[in-house]
Amino acid sequence: MGALSSRMLWGRGGRAPEDPGVAREEEEAVEAAVAVIEEGEEESEETRPTTSQGSHKRKTGPEGLLSKVPRRKRAKDSSGSVYEALFLRGEDSDVQIRALGEEWNLHRIYLCQSGYFASMFSGAWRETTMNTIELQMPDENIDREALHEVLGSLYLDTVLIPPSRVVAILATASLLQLDELIQQCGEVMKETVTAQTVCSYYYSSESYGLQNIRIMCLQWLLDNLMTQHSDELLREVSLDLMKELIASSELLVIEVEMDVYTTLKKWVFLQLHPTWRGPRKALLPDADSWFARSRRESEGTPFLETEQGRAFVPVFQQLRIAYIICDLPSACVIDQDALIPATWLTPVYKEQWLALLQAEQTRELGPMDVHVSDLQGNSMRCGGQLHRDEQRSWRWAGFNFGWDLVVCYANRRIIFRRSALNKSCGLGVSLLWQRKVAFRLRLASLDRAGRAIFRKDTEYQMLSLRKDQELEVVNLEHHDIVFPIYVACNFLYLPGEGHFPE
Image 1 (cartoon, rainbow, N blue to C red):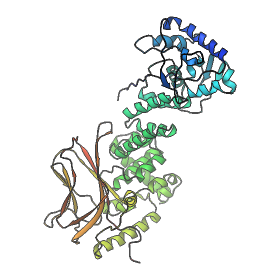
Image 2 (cartoon, one colour):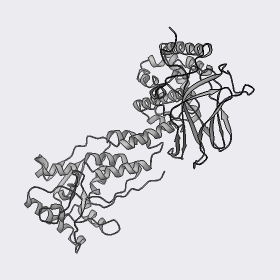
Image 3 (cartoon, rainbow, N blue to C red):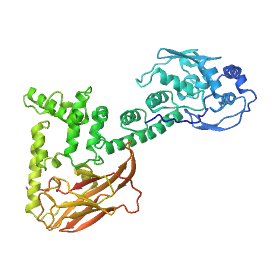
Image 4 (cartoon, rainbow, N blue to C red):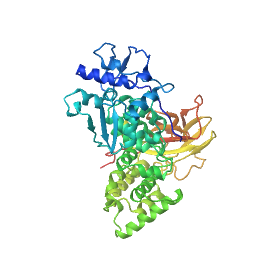
């Protein structure tokens, strides 16, 4: 994606020095430096918020230092001359800023737009009367170029923030307490979230308190982690972030839970081999080969019990293993890979076996009392993709012991149907006349950058279907939708823990 420019008119608030004599000297120095630029310009009374204080009115009286700050012109006239004279050439500078091996000859009257400098110059700090100030940069995201850009923004009406520089500028603006520039960085990030930027935006939004950006990036990852198939994206997802994604019922799973496990294998391999490069189709075979070699070298020890694998345990604990081992091919892969310890699998197999017996040998129709927390934490996650607006039906493999639930799309409607006895619908058909299931359906259409351009969710609800009965779940007839559309569903059929007979 090309660079996106973001321009904003900057507030010119600040804090007046307490010494009137110093204030007058600073005022005269700045006026002399820009006399030619500002000649004949009248000052107006206006209300502006500052970065360090609440909203206040600038006064034209002698007690208001900011009343004499030259009003910076817009880019279309001579604001560039102010920038060149005062910032780049440092004419009539009254303070020198040193940081990151660089020096800037600047003006307190402009620096006071920053909450950081306003506090420094107006309090009992040692730097209040110093002519040279050494700044320490504790944040590794701040570099010399970003500091130069942010300090220069104090002398300009407009600021250009390319996406490639937004994290460094955000870090610098946060240190210097420039609220408007922080907000502007957030706006740039909103418009430029892609597979290449989403992780860095997510981490920086956590560090610098942009909660709305964090939520937006998390939703992007939930929508795209399983759909982008990007090894570069997988490399950048941290352990903590992956744990949060895998634990979420909002994760857009394509096909079934087994695909989440496969994604984790690729992710672990790339975390341990960040320099791996190759075609996309080679990633999983290379990962499988490495895990097999690791298993031989560890004499059959499950990967998650090895020294390398222990770090990934919290992530794999978020897998919903019960919905993986209910499918024979998937269960065979889990056994062959030997990533997951038997101590994790054995109780799940027992629980699933008892659930199967209960489903087929009792009159239990399905869940009776279901809470939203049950669905969020324990539901089966599955999905599919509608590439075109054409009739289609499908069924998810391994769905709850062969319950004959079919999903149909026709005439812009999504319908759940129990298959007719004379129609083929895959392996296994329930003998029960009626079944119950709790579910939630989610639809999303994503643009090329992975951002949702259409989204529709149903509430969690209980569904009871008899043989050959059907139910319209979603009607899209009057919606402006763009194909392809992802269809994701959360199902909960099996009784919860403690429902089995003693």
